[in-house]
Image 1 (tube, rainbow, N blue to C red):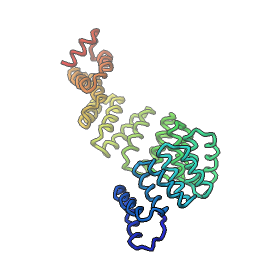
Image 2: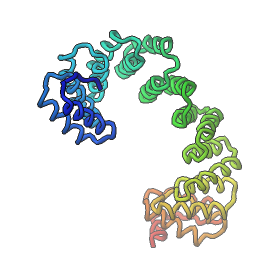
Image 3: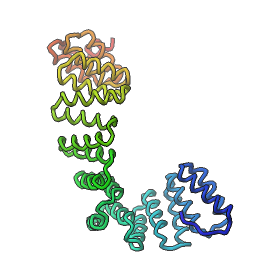
Image 4: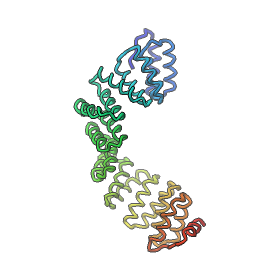
Length: 343
């Protein structure tokens, strides 16, 4: 944060204290110190800039916009404050104002990647045809700016432009590989039905962080989607070791073991899922199905009763499961079945 020399050691120390509190996330204390400084020097643009920064961090977009405007009135076309004003206006959902700030910052400091990328992002959010031209400019001027391309990817993803978002995240990841970017790429590839490529992305994430639970889980789900149940099982077993208390992991293991018709392993996994999350109705229904497949109809009915108590809308699936398995029951009167399970 730039500031003017007040010729006062106490002033400088107090300003440094406010900045330190801001960096530590102690926003209320930073704001209190900033207000104290402003009372003594309302003509200091840096103090209004500080107030805008704190307000933006507190999620007070409108307050931040006003503070940034006061700072710019005292120090026109100051690029960091223009960018701050753009972020504040965007936070307040004043997108045309945000665009004006970012475009002024870009005109003044075209060498700053943030000015170009944020101009592009707001153009995308406004649905402007000019966004394509700004994308081309960013690609030419800042092809390896990972943070900028990640921000572009976020904006494109929110607009449902999956292919374009994937391209942006891929460029960001090439510039600075990270677990987060690999996971984002994997999720988008999955959404596009490109499961084999998604697996490669999740494996990249796992290579960067071997004990990443989410990477192991997403890998297991992708392998199951491909029909490679053995690899899926090995991968989800790894996820279970990483987080033994995860109902999601135990449920996924139950699904894979069920696909392999390994009833004992599936039953054990679903029971562990329910122990971790007793209100997981899907696990209760699936436990009943697998118990029924294994020939234990009494225990299956108990599981179905539990599922129905957790979530009554599971009844249709339960009724279908009871009549579909080799060891099952056919009920013509579904109300009687519901009463039977509730008893």
